[in-house]
Every structure is written in structure tokens, then in C-alpha cells.
Length: 224
Ligand SMILES: Nc1ncnc2c1ncn2[C@@H]1O[C@H](COP(=O)(O)OP(=O)(O)OP(=O)(O)O)[C@@H](O)[C@H]1O
Ligand SMILES: [Mg+2]
Image 1: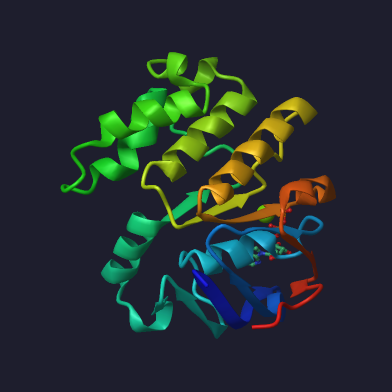
Image 2: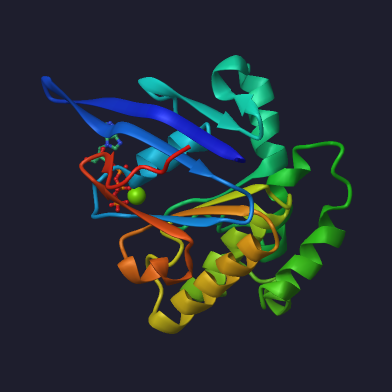
């Protein structure tokens, strides 16, 4: 299993009360698998994905990614692990408006000195995603589906072992949504684990497993 999580909880405060945005979630995903978490707005999907990606600390529970427990890693080690192996497509728009498509794709990698092949890697990726002709354009001239492909290209540049996609088709029409889902399925077929969150139950058509999430709880638990 590339990712395993046991008993994840996340408690938040609302006014004088606390509530569990994620309530005792256990999950495992293997490379080559595509898994969907489907649930209504506010059910805790993004909170869970952020925790699984190591971006947010859980209130309880344990996560192992690529054989390493997040608990056992310092901030820098965790950052390096994520940067080398985990692609994250955030919910909503995450491209930077003052950078071109190509710059948006390679920017995160340019922070790592050992990465000097980013342009050479980025172009074939843009071609694969059907947006290489837009490499020099700025995001304001792109459609929603094209912008989503830029986010996907950025997440794929490192050839991640795990790709997390939070509502990757959230604001797209049916045709663009189907294209993005086919793309994510092909990434899983090529050996990466793909974990996505969606409002949309139709997203699960391409997935090996789908979990319903409601009020912080996953509808069914996999057996480890
Ligand atoms: N930092 C925070 N502090 C307090 N409450 C929060 C915080 N972040 C999220 N929440 C609450 O936790 C719950 C889960 O939020 P989350 O963003 O995980 O839901 P979601 O399932 O991703 O929703 P959507 O489908 O709208 O993206 C919501 O009730 C939200 O208001
Ligand atoms: Mg969300």
C-alpha cells in the first residue's frame, strides 16, 4: 500500500463547541488504484485529503505514505517526501495569474536545485494533456477545463506515486469532466495511486472503489 491511514480524526472549533470534521477514518490505497471519496459539501473531504497529503495535522490517528509515517518525519523531511512523490490538485483554481502556463507548471519544481530538467519534462506533459499550444499563455485566456489541466500537469511533473485530486471536475461541463476523469484513470493505469474527492457520484464510474463521506465519517471501511 502506498498510503495507509488509521483512525484519523480532525476536531475543529465552532463558536463554543467543537466538532469532528473527520471522524475515525481509516483508508488504504495501492499504486495503480483509483479511489473516490464522494460526499456532500461540508462532509470533510478536503480536510481528510489535506491530512492524507501531510498538509494538515490530524487531532488523532496515523498515516503512512511510501513506507514512512508522517509522525516520524520532521517538517523538512515531510516536505521533501511530498515534493518527490505526492501530486496534489487543489480544490478550485490554483494557478497563479501572473505566470504563464509553462511557468505555472514548473514553478514548484524550480525551488529544488537538483531539478534542472523541468522544461524538458514539462513540454511532453503539456502535450499529453492537450495544452502544449497554450504554454506561453496566461491563465486569464484559458477555459476552466484548460486551467484544470494546468493544475494536473503541475501535479504530474514529478511523476508522483500518489496523486490526490480534490474535486477535479468541480466546475467543469460534462465533456470536460469526462476528459479529466479519463486522464486520471490513465494515470492510475500507468501505476500511480489516484485518490479523488467529488460531490458527483458519477465520478466513481472510473474508480476501483468509492467511499461515501457524511459528517466526517466514511461509509465503509476497507479491510487491511
Ligand atoms: N479551519 C477550519 N476551522 C473550522 N472549521 C473548518 C475549518 N476547515 C473546514 N472546516 C469545517 O469542516 C467541515 C468540513 O470542511 P471540508 O472543507 O473538509 O468539507 P468538504 O467535504 O471538502 O466540502 P466541499 O464539498 O464544499 O468542498 C465544514 O463544516 C467546514 O466548515
Ligand atoms: Mg472540499
